[in-house]
Length: 408
Image 1: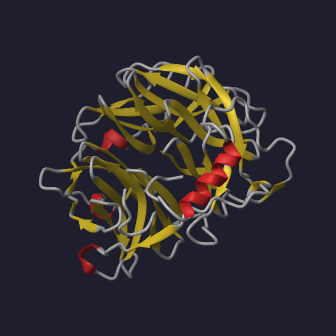
Image 2: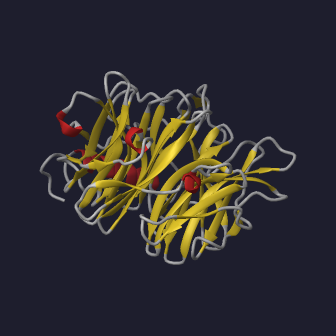
């Protein structure tokens, strides 16, 4: 696993994965949870967790200050890595913060320029990068109702990360609901989220000029139910957005996906669900297969677009933990998928080498990774290396697979 680890632990990991998964032909309809006893981590796996040999990294405080750092997303492209998040002063004042690295090991603070009241107090929570161009989203609670005030950001020609001026109604206004994630593809940029009318997107050929697409037929809510969008990915034929629909007359949500060539006209795709609560929260592409992951009843599940429609893949973990079950991150690396999921109490890592058909526990950098408010796990990938940022509620730490100075 992970080509950045070429000796030692990698040999053992590759051997274990080969015995566990065999070839990488996608497994159809795998159900790891069926018939298995379940504990708080999910289906009992009698194999030892995969150990990627995490190495701690140092993250400098912006400006050399004593603030608490918060990392919320990782993005990479060309020969650059980026981290986005925030810094919290002793009096609780927050501000946006970002970092960059040429190798994913040594990090430097990235200059951040905020112009608006909420931009100066925002925490950056989602980022996407292409050809060295970085776009990000930030948010700060405010206003009479304490709703998140969302701001857009882009990396400028001088290398700094600057707030993009935008009218309040672009992300807020009377029809606002939520703004989830930003994605990038060959045709430009796409942000996904939700409005009062249901699932919505924001499209741009340049991250300095997003336009909202709301109440779009098939994307928005309709007689079939209320729609939500959570994540997106790009391909040669356009965009894929994943989310859920609350069917009219039912409490539970069902998984759903949408495709579009230009980000403006959308076609809804049915995704098989279960009698329980299912939704697609994150999506990634591995070996040409589009895989979505999200809560699936009492476990987490994977769904795969096999070219002729969506099929149910494997199940893993457990959603039982006393809080909201969420997929914190999903990335593809060297033909494998790595997912970080939360059961509301703790975060866990899982890896699949057969396009989501079967999953195995992946050892984290610390024994316990707590979940909940002000806690997060995020993942990033570039050049066969995995970077993990962990915030336990008191501090953020940064980790990487491989060893410092190893040959890529």
